[in-house]
Image 1 (cartoon, rainbow, N blue to C red):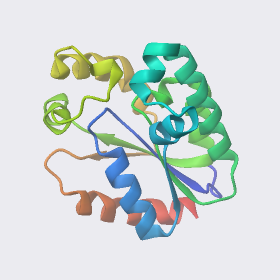
Image 2 (image 1 turned 30 degrees about the vertical axis):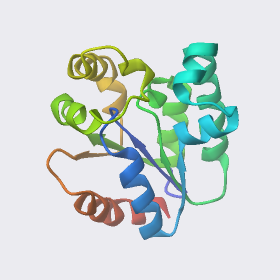
Image 3 (image 1 turned 90 degrees about the vertical axis):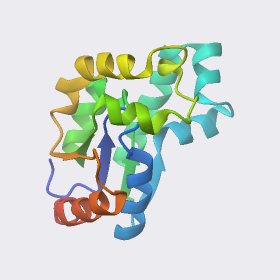
Image 4 (image 1 turned 180 degrees about the horizontal axis):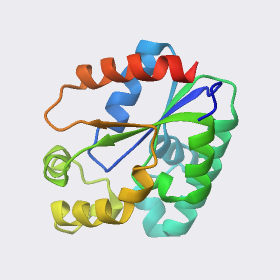
Length: 175
């Protein structure tokens, strides 16, 4: 990680709390906040499931990479909540590890599935055994997530506790 890194990048499974923690952390540190999936959806003027259905995952990943690299190159201090697969991309991961404090919000598939029960906007989790699919995703993505600078277990923790911990750990490393 570059000592002059300007960003904090949150990664982890769907349901780890990236968007919730990210927005609260950005507010606390007075950084900008970008929810990558939401920003992509707004730019495409369609939901993530619609992008996947109409254009496929490859177009979504291309849009994700373009936005991620733009944010990482910006001079604005930004907390970036990535989609669960964003840092599987080698270019995204390598650039984030150099330009940001990368944080893996670690969550068990069981806890993530509980948190996601009310959401049906995750195309890679639709029409499936959510817990089983999350276990598969964790297995395939664990090595990418494990390269993060900081790992925080979010199971059974309050969002305020996670934000407080990250504010103390990342502020000195990222400013």
